[in-house]
Amino acid sequence: MADQPTRGGQKQQQQMQQQVQPSEAIKSLLPQQGPSKSQVLAVVTLFPFGGALLCLAGLTLVGTLIGLAVATPVFLLFSPVLVPAALTIALAVTGFLTSGAFGITALSSLSWMINYMRRMRGTTGEQQVVPAKRWGL
Image (cartoon, rainbow, N blue to C red):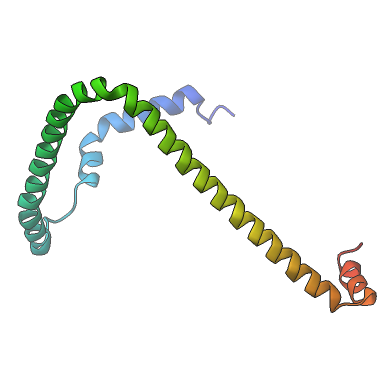
């Protein structure tokens, strides 16, 4: 029993191992060899492309902010008309989507009931009991 270290002793040993070998831990994270030619070519090719896309994203952000600054007074001026119009359009879209969802639900339920009735018409009572016996009913 005395040979086994306590929990505190285990933590101290782990801390000492980490303090003794920090360079080994860092070396294990680094690759053993340098990047291949294809990796270097990919970085050299994609770096300018990524920079151009970043510039376009910045220009888009600036354009959006300028457009918002210009459109804000117009929105405030026409808000008594725009807010009810937006609510009306949102309610109409919600109504159409809801009616479509109810329609699809009704059609799938009707299809399921028709298929169920067709299966029931072709079977007799004895054929229905056999699967029930397999399930232990």
